[in-house]
Length: 75
View 1 (cartoon, one colour):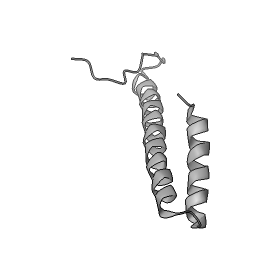
View 2 (cartoon, rainbow, N blue to C red; view 1 turned 180 degrees about the vertical axis):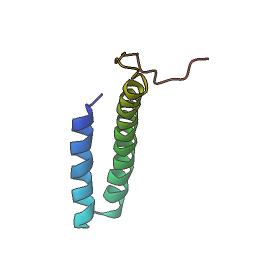
View 3 (tube, rainbow, N blue to C red; view 1 turned 30 degrees about the vertical axis):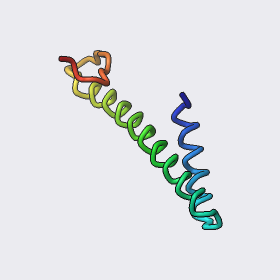
View 4 (cartoon, rainbow, N blue to C red; view 1 turned 120 degrees about the vertical axis):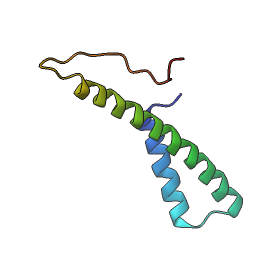
């Protein structure tokens, strides 16, 4: 699985290619679909990182306590 930085770089490349407007429709659609997937993956990673930061802020009672961040809700 690519890193966040790799996914973001690939997404930027796709946006640049699509903005040029010189691709065939089929290729544009293929790149658009790939870009949507990369965008969703990047958003998920950012949301998880934001959740970790929020957990640290919420734990402040004079000291910081690190707790694991759960990406899935427990039963």
